[in-house]
Image (cartoon, rainbow over all chains, first blue to last red):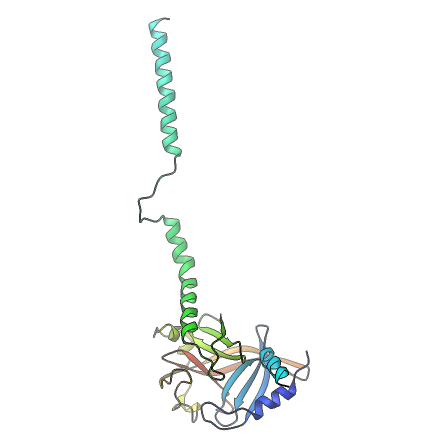
Length: 64
Length: 182
C-alpha cells in the first residue's frame, strides 16, 4: 500500500489543537488490529487525535 | 368361560390400561406455572445476556450523545476495543474516539486500567481544559500498553507503546497524549 504523504503533510499543517488552540502537529501512521490509522499530535501540548487512515485518504482524494 | 380365567383376564386388561395411563402422564411434558423460569434459562440469562445487553445499552447511549468533536457529525460506528474501552469512529471524518466503558455507563468503580495511573504533572497545560464533548472538568488519568506497527516508506516496525490517557469522569471520552510532547 502506498502511503499518501501529502495527506500527512496536510494533516500536520492544518492541525489546530482543540485543547490549547495552538497550530501545528506531527503525523504518524500506525496499524493495530488490522486497522490503519494516522495520528496527529499537537507540538505544544501533546494532545493526539487518531484518524481512520482510509476515511481520511478518501476524503482527501475527493477534495483534491 | 371359567370365572377365574375371566378374573385373570380382567386383571390383565386393568393392569395394561393402568400402565398405559401412568406411562402417558410420565412422558407428557410438564407445564410451567406462569412467571417461573427453568434452571437452564436462568443459567443462560446470567451467562450470556448481561454482557450483550450492557454493550447494547452503551451503544444506545452513545447513539444519543455522540457528536464528533471535529466535524460535529453524528454518524458513527462503535466497536468494543477491549474489556474497558469502546472505540467509536466518525464515519464522516474518520476521527477515532475512545470511551472508558465504566465512566460512560456512569459507574465509579476502579478497573485494572484506571488503577495504573501516572503523575499528573506529566501533562503540562492540559489539566485545566474541559472535556471536548461535555465540558466537564474532572478527569481520570491512566496509562495503557498497546502493540502498534509503525510504517514509514515501506519500513515496518512493531513495538509496544505506552499511551497516556485521561478520561472524562462524566461521559468517559478518552484523550490521548504523546508523552514526548505533553
